[in-house]
Image 1 (cartoon, helix red, strand yellow):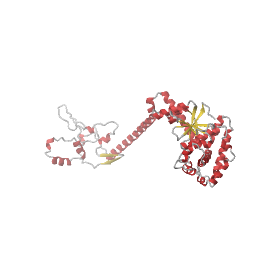
Image 2: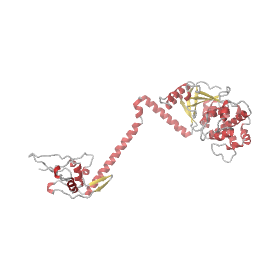
Image 3: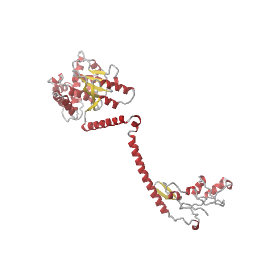
Image 4: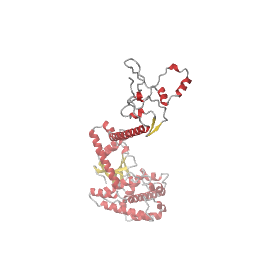
Length: 453
């Protein structure tokens, strides 16, 4: 008894042809032209045909081919059985029908008549189901990968205690960043100086080791560090913050009665001061009037803070100043004091008087041969497109009459590790800053060794 195909579509067995039946290539080509497309493919890539024999030893020629046998469960059976349809994405297009060579109904009593539309609907439904399931699985895989990737690099090399400690530190850092963003802090909250170093410098490079050694040296004198906002005002902000939060005695230049009268006098004498560039538009006020208002505010705030005896209250009051726009008015006042000091040094040098060495360097630059060029090419850019250069840090110290002591961490191990701006005024108060690159400055707090006065 002949075996029956398992598929719903019956395919005739292909008659075998020996290699000698084609006498030449032309005959083979002519012969192949009469074959259907499916038969051509089967000639090029023939499926292995199993040989089944009956108990009498006779071959059974109507055994279904491998492509007609049962396919894996995750692929629709109708997709394999239907050779007359081509699937392109989500669409199912019908190929031109080939002349059927179906056997008689008596030879396939179990065959079920299926219309092309039913087959198409079945394929589309099955594909849609598979695509939905695939998207769901892919989404789950991506979620797992994303979640696991957060700690993959850490888990391989560190134990659980170290990982948990770092997560806590990251949480603190995120909170501090959020707070800083919300309040627009000019100076951030206190962070333990060793923890800050470990968080910022983890590598084993030469630079990282030098930074860690520098921070360790500083930890002998200061307990914490406060990050200063990283804009082009950072040198002015860090220095002024230390002056206002630490000093209790007013500097000599502030006691002078004509401090607020200086802008009008200097503008009348040096008309080019009207080129002053403010941090924002002040309306139609004259230049000297705007500068005078900034100086009055600086004097007012400095006097108020100098009267506060409690260090914590002084710090709190100082923090309030550096959370508002008032701080930028103070920077304009400090910049004017720098310009006034530069004019005095330049005039003294022109008169043959002795001046500090940095004054020669200040006016030896091609871009600042005199105070007018210094204002136009340097001071006007501070806070906008640049910060203070090294020689201008000396000028800042002279303008405020404070010695600025800076730990230059990248210079650790050299004579320049600790630099004073200036270094020739032993009786001036001292404020301390930290820098890693001479461009950005932070402030150390919680003094272990009292700041000298």
